[in-house]
Length: 301
Image: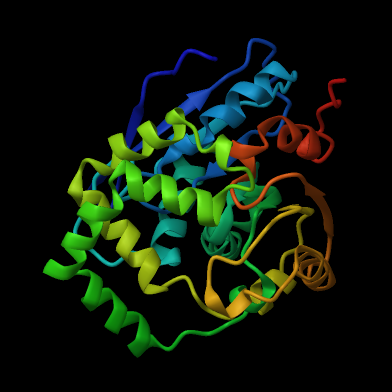
């Protein structure tokens, strides 16, 4: 495992934001940097990507990797606000313009695809390509939630009832059960490293605001037009056992999901690998190999 680099900080809209910068031993300045967008959930932050980063360098990636914590998660500030995908996209736009300052390949996990889509709209010139990892089913990513419904659920979560729920949701027992039922294809891969990382980051109750924003569905909009407007090479990576995290997409198979994304994307390619809904963690080796050609790295045999 690569030694963890020191956390670095920058200011955005008077908030302190955190990130880590990972540079391989064979770093080549001409390579395209990778910008990682972590998922939102109980205890999740940029640490989600550590296995991917370690395996990438083990397999010979020469790309420098930027791994930011989204506001409300990890090492940055955690204000009591309702976060929208555009809020996080504006944070990353600032990060691109002022910290990275060159085009990147964006790798985004799960439903945070909504943030990547908003980011492309804001800062297309600094994005060379995108990788959608375990994206939502097509039914979900094209389903428009009403504003009143989003506000209703935010108010429900942002209450004593929500606080009590979060205290329960951050217990190892709940996290293991949820991960086994909804995230991982193989129960044995829900390991101590995963659970310990989640419980440690969720110990700070202020992390609940980002999670509640996600659960309230502020990301649930019809993004089909934004997906169709992407003029960058895009790779969609789905698990062979992928399943919908929302009720709307329960009957949609991975093949149907992949076909719908590729039909909409202007420059889309797709691949399926073993695993379910957290491929960079559960199927790390396969995931790193699957995306290597897209980012210009020879596949290590």
